[in-house]
Length: 156
Image (cartoon, rainbow, N blue to C red; front, side, top):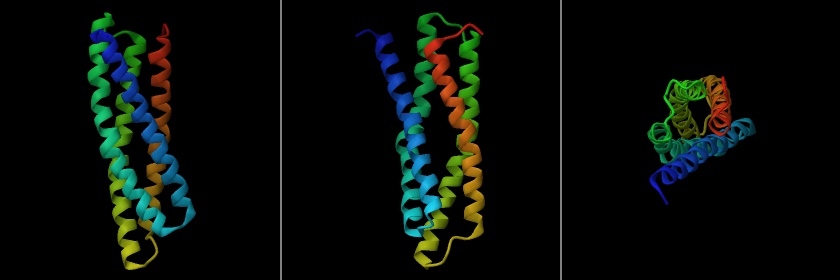
């Protein structure tokens, strides 16, 4: 296997892990939050934070590293419209993801404390949850568009 194909494989697998972990985490967090089960919210929010550290963070680093290398090896200038738009959307998704990570960490801490103290979640958790969702939707859509652009490389 040559270097280009090895990088391409790593780029594809890491993108699937990044978006798949994000979608899976969002699914479980979304529905667990609506369950009203404080023990479940404490566990799931803790595991969502862990999944971001273990899977999403490394792939967020691998994606641009392998992507820039692949673009260079394939002879695509970064100013190529589909590539430039992909990069902009990746940065946009990252700008949404960073506050989401902070919110997840805070939500996990709040849920764990409420569970330990056997008290209901405070209203702050609900506010964080709404922001978490509001930032997650556009980030996910941006990444779906990036997948489209990477596969189709349309003339823009």
